[in-house]
Amino acid sequence: MDETILAGEARTLDDSLGFILAVIGSVLLSYRATALQRDGVRLALDGDEGGAQALQAQVRRLRLLAGAILLGPLGFFLCLALRAAEQTRGDRLAEGSARTNLAASVLVMLAALLRFLDQLGQDAA
Image (cartoon, rainbow, N blue to C red; front, side, top):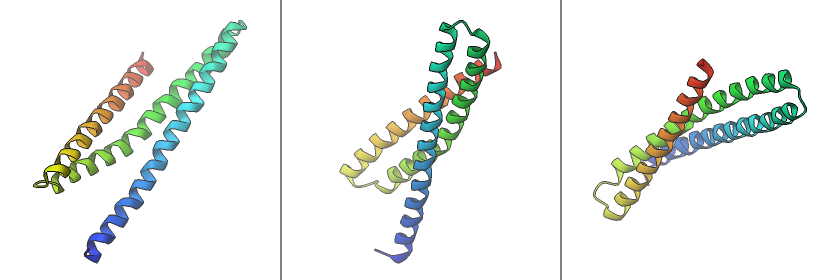
């Protein structure tokens, strides 16, 4: 393989690792939001409505941040799927796999975008 191509692939893999870390960070923020939500439910059960509401505000902010962070990596991986679909034209087996991966990437991005927009709408209300 050409050294220039390999260098480009190495950069893409480095970028992928960074975006995977961003996905992990988003998941950790979602985990924290869920733990706070559980704590809020416990406070509500104990009769502390003010404390429960304060935690719910934190939960909404964390979920919004997690969703915003997630969109970047998903956009990157969608672009990689588009590139793969372009590069595999003519190779019937690889082209079919690339199309499947592209469809999956589009659906995942759409789902994340819908959830993010829903969260924005809840925050505005």
